[in-house]
Image (tube, rainbow, N blue to C red; front, side, top):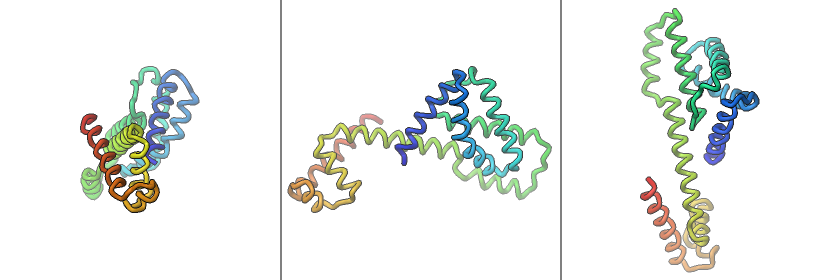
Length: 191
């Protein structure tokens, strides 16, 4: 799944660029891809459903009208979430809705929950690390790749690995150890 999410991020970047260059179809895809998520984000903020819907409509209209002035977004989903939340909070603060004490307490409790942006950033960082790990695994010798696959993806023990690869028990341990050691070294250098 993380690889699929990374692909979606890459695809979102391409759509974002096309949308900024007047591509209505790209804008439509972005709209349908992110509308539900943005709606849920607004609802999680304990804001009335109608206000969330109205603000979403206004938000996407604004995006289309100002598409050529929008900045390049490395993570369009994160950009959309932050911008939408800012607009929604601005609308709420301008409205004359009275906030009850229980609403304030609820907001204080929610302050301690990880924000949607933080979750997205963490998810994207995990995806980038996973992609990097996959790239580094591809650089390993084929035998080490096979051993890692059997150990960590097929969840085989060393006896099973040695049988599958037709090598000794100790050789299977050595293959895994060397592969993991190379991966650790490459991550120390890269980070």
